[in-house]
Image 1 (spheres, one colour):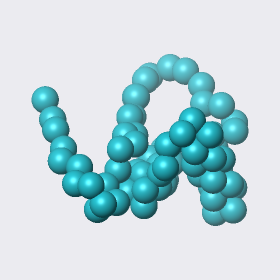
Image 2 (cartoon, rainbow, N blue to C red):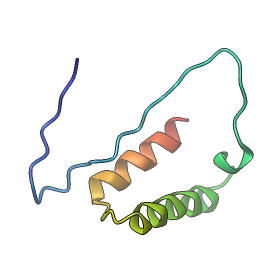
Image 3 (tube, rainbow, N blue to C red):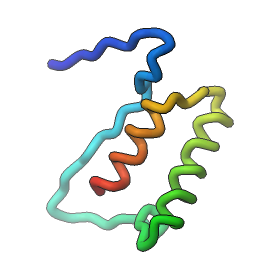
Length: 72
């Protein structure tokens, strides 16, 4: 079990990145980036989707999304 503390106004993340490791499966090509510009465009698109859903991503949320993609 885990937990975290989010303090209002600190830029903490409310977005979580979940890693699922499987021995079989496929990754959609649109999720793979070969250049920094492609990665930036993918992240910008995901942030736009969060904003369209009514969320206001913080710097912590952006870091969480970036770290998830870089790790993948």
